[in-house]
Length: 153
Image 1 (cartoon, one colour):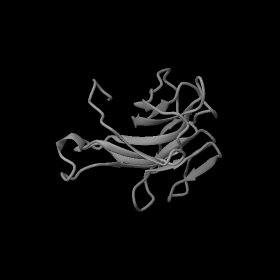
Image 2 (cartoon, rainbow, N blue to C red):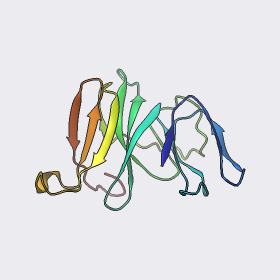
Image 3 (cartoon, helix red, strand yellow):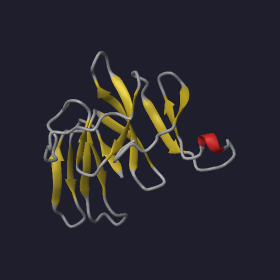
């Protein structure tokens, strides 16, 4: 998994085939050898960091997820082919279905700079499989626990 912000990209796979060209922030994936390049999802201004749930579902942080009543960074659960955030900052390259993924957690403009799923036992069961995110602007580490709710969290 890797990311691109709203500054534009031209994704060309190892086979020379153009996968996407655009400026909508996105989450992209490919195999380690560069094959099977795809746009996994679009949304926000700049997805920043990635972690996976125990079932392999993609969770990321995102700077400027929305600008509803101020700028908000967020924690996002991505679904293949989805668009996150309430509006487009740049035209998305994926087909739009009309439904947009909301944030799992909306923050202020904190500049998320790291994300990890805690897998150890040292902190006790309370923190097992929760997520720790770092916020650059406020010099904080925050803990978020997500719980399954239907097809998302």
